[in-house]
View (cartoon, protein in one colour):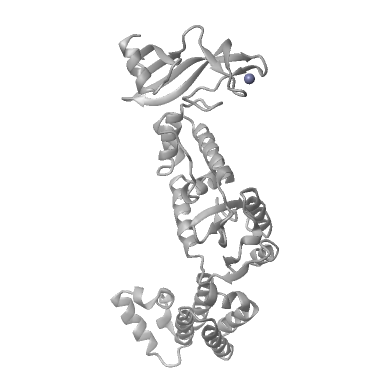
Length: 405
Ligand SMILES: [Zn+2]
């Protein structure tokens, strides 16, 4: 064998009967074409029974391979079809590429490694391919890894929606709170998403029956979905979402008071941020405002701080007593936005109280959401839900992609 050909045969990791038998190097086009061949008379195993069979005929194919020093490299081969006495004539698999792909396995491994870090369209431009071709590679590996994923050990789930495109277009995310990974994503944010999640669990060796804890917001659609699937789960209403309700109430009180107290103008964040997160200047301004007599906003703010304090207690009985007192005080406060929150808490009492036992929140989902949204922004959006969901699994699914190395 020619020494150059032998070198490329080794570099490609080819094993007999496959070997490089011709190398074409086109400097002007910055292109390298490697021709892979097998000796006349070689036999290949039947893909069904593994028995060595004679070659029936061949088909010319070409695959894009990793660049060699800025030269786009292509692998060419006549792929044999074998004739098995039992399983008739069929194409044999080649060791360097999966069936139907125009890329070698190593090229695909490189693609999968960089699309986690870089928008797909950017990668496509960089390697001079269309993004559609890359999305097909991503879809293949994500689908294969998800097929193999076992979800029988999932017990605690957090659910939330994330916006997938502009306006009111959502994807619901189901996250394993213990393993801290995305286990299911689906378009929409209605009750049906829970049914789809239950089906998907079943398809992966799990069961909706084994889900015992569920963390989510107060969305009526989610509550309706969760009431049916999973049947045994106890719902914890996420305390960050509860805090959001209270913050909105505090701000509503402030807005109602700003006409009679112009000092409250531009003070929105002073009341909503945690005291420890305020700058010295902001804190000084807040202390100034708190000195004003009979300020309703200050009263609402006090309710906010107390609520937050209650949600650090890790005892159900103790928490329930304090929360009931909070609700009674809020109802008697004469501040309509807080009265409204008090009734919301009463109407969702079991799920609100559940936190004192389960201690679960959607904290992980908040982080996941921001990772997804930043990837989406860098990519300037995803053309389809499917692309968005595949990227979500890739970034947050802790999938075993089993890539060739
Ligand atoms: Zn056979």
